[in-house]
Length: 548
Image 1: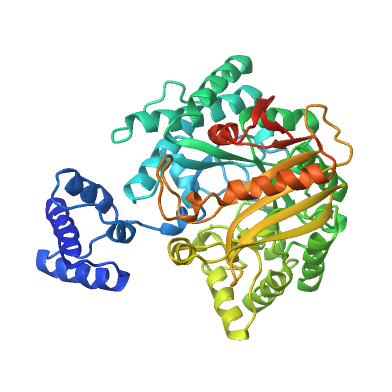
Image 2: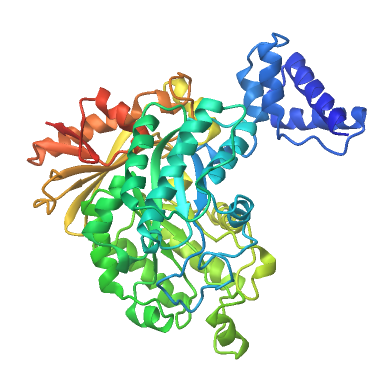
């Protein structure tokens, strides 16, 4: 059967090439035609790219960009300009005791064994090396570029784990990216360091730095590293360590900005810790993602809406990104017991939908809503939201009601814009938004077209008095060019190779100079240091710095 499917896939590509098919609908019709002819139930896209590449290599067909796009699976995974690789740490005791968190045995706190990302981690025995290789291979087989990697390390509060394990885990992720690029078609999944790291962290620190140096010129470069933690675990020492590891973004579990709600849900910290952590992270240049949880025990839709209004207007908060995880009831949580006793009732589908619509109507254009729900399988949710395509439901509603979410994710260019609009000499304009945040001034620069599609953005932070001697008063916290991820060194039509990022950097340097700064820093991912070196930046400690 497998042999027959492979033959069918080869015939599919050959006929699509011969007929000049470039539209998804025509491709689906051809798929059905081939399936009937070869008597197979279906022809999944998985593996089509490899067959296509072999046909090109054997000179049976010529390179065809239109066909390549059709063969890619789940294009959205790389439409933000990078390939996202998420990995999970081993189960360890969590410093928190939150009311809503599941405590499933042998699982990292707050994670369930039937979540997709967790299932992949279990399959790899939580080995970081194997997890990274597995994801890179899956992306490659689905036709995605794996040159620019955004690595996300999940599993709860990363810096609550043993120190040697932290350095070992990150080092293995870098090593996997370096090895994948070398072996490409046939990767070795065996890892001699499988299990909990037991040697001194200094040894793993040296190994990490060695792999980071290799990664600067590797084929699969880690251009961004995200770590998860709690607000009360953030301090200057921890942030210096995070930078040493190559971290560029921190996701913190905020959940609520009201002390009474935090206390009722046993978060173990207050709003004071959230405010202090936010300022410290911004002054270090990190991008910040808040995890927010509407529908917590003791809250209400009205109170939650007021919370988000304050989140967007109070200078003590102002996150760069949001992951909104509506509270749900799962087994092995204290909230489950309260729900059984009738003391907790989650929002109805309409209440939740109305709330999320109201939030999306007021969100500033410099914040990105990365997630609207958490990827918890329906069978694990005993009460609460079970609508898996909630974002799509809300998008459809916004179109019917005639309003549009202004968040970054809803404005990012996708396929059609990145490959068509910009090539018709569309005039892009630079928008500049300034706002006060955590004792400093934030300058948000964006390149947009007349329809307010977002092509590139930059976040510049200016502080009058920098508390950290190694950092100047001006620091670029984020630069991102949107559009489909393109291989390093390749030039194509996509917006990633139009020099948009460089244009914004030049503008940021000009603004920093006007505001009296003589130096500017960039919180650079390890794999993108070479790019900044070409623009006159030099590595100082863990930042790329340039004199103005």
